[in-house]
Length: 76
Image 1: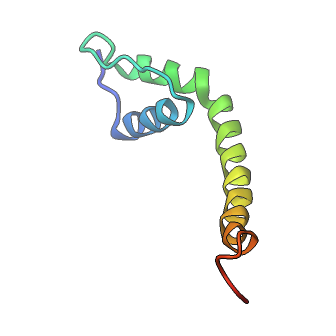
Image 2 (image 1 turned 135 degrees about the horizontal axis):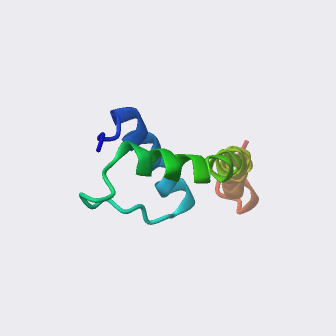
């Protein structure tokens, strides 16, 4: 069995983190096919979540800037 590439490992880790998924990392699962299958099964959802997080982060950034002003903590 062929081991996964460094690129596959890094991408699978990102996908598992963003989607909050458990990805098996035992010796039996450490093949390029298992990683390929995991990546392909979750890639669309991962892309969608990344897009949502970017939009959400932008909105949160604006909120973070103005919350202090709303509470009278900052003066302009």
